[in-house]
Length: 333
Image (cartoon, rainbow, N blue to C red):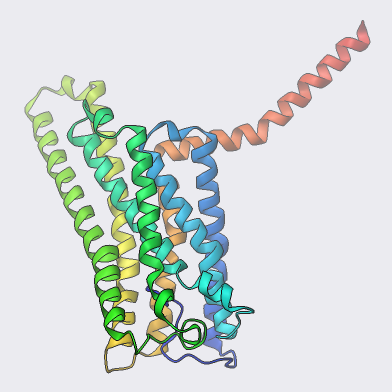
């Protein structure tokens, strides 16, 4: 990620395409297709099947939106940059696309953090949950998530020269202190460390509640384990486990690239483009993985998808049959 998430350690204006670059372009193009299709389908399911009646899906919608926009607007600029670093037809486009990596990455991890905290509220106090997380508060949190992501993404374009942003991708030497503070405080602290701590604490607490709940079940008779409340709690714990995996995958996908970018920007040693490209692919893969994991392991989303597909596939045929029957009856009269 970073403010120059598509900047290679050895940038060039227009280098010949090597076999490695061709493979990278093909893989990123594949990711764009998968991420756009998967997240677009997820967004459609959430909106069409009225899953937004559940506050939990407000934050899932935000996550899917950030992944979709990342695949639509940011990854293609990386692909174009592999053909020619100076592909920008105008500096205005350059200033627009440069902050997108931070914007969508921050929105994703903030949404995941909100998902973790919200799931903890659901499990820790199910009776008071509606009071602790009303729809209006969830919408305010979403607005704060995207506003704070925008604020984190834009500072570098305010002090860097246009040549540094659009061509070389280098940090500003005249504003070196600002660059250090921005990269280590804004990005490392707010995009990696704090969200990681929030998600870790939330899911550890959820695990402790789940273990306590399991011990309570074991201490009771077998009939009590079949009650509706127990089934619902198990369902909540399973959903939390899936979301914990998604949050962990995000950190695993983005953390290596952060390390590479940090060493490349501020360290004395140079990073091989091979490592840079590999970790770049791993980072972007996250946008395609999220919807796949949600469709595979979230039963509610999966059922909503099946219902939507069945309705789309079979409803027109049913209507056609009804119209044919009506026409036949009218002819008979």
